Amino acid sequence: MNPSAGDLCTWPHNPLVRDSKRRPLVVLSTAYPGRSTVIVVPLTSDLSSRSLPLRLVIQATPATGLAADSLALCDQITCLLVSLLEESFGQLDQGLLAQLRQRGALALGLMPSDLRAGG
Image 1 (cartoon, rainbow, N blue to C red):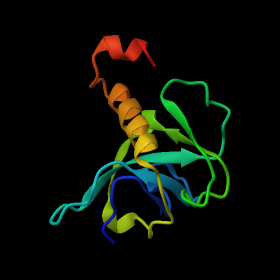
Image 2: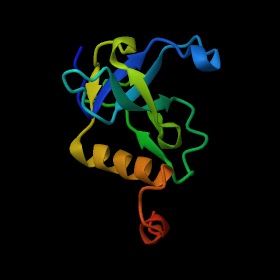
Image 3: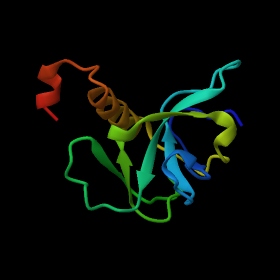
């Protein structure tokens, strides 16, 4: 598998937090030859924290392949081995991918404070 930025994939499980569920995620970085990891944003179907500034709703559409609207947890960006990912089941449009990247950059403290205030 060679995931691209914007791909929606499934992570079979997260042994680090003793999570046995398969989790959907969005790939933020492209897997380049010789690189074994990608940067990803996990998704949840629990929309209760949707008002938090580092969370973004991803709608269930034929393009995304999601069964239900989901929340991108941009404050939980992580790096995963490509070998842990299952095949892509959907794709984000470039506008939504740009919003995810912006919120991810905010979460990592990579954006100037004047941009943070604008949300």
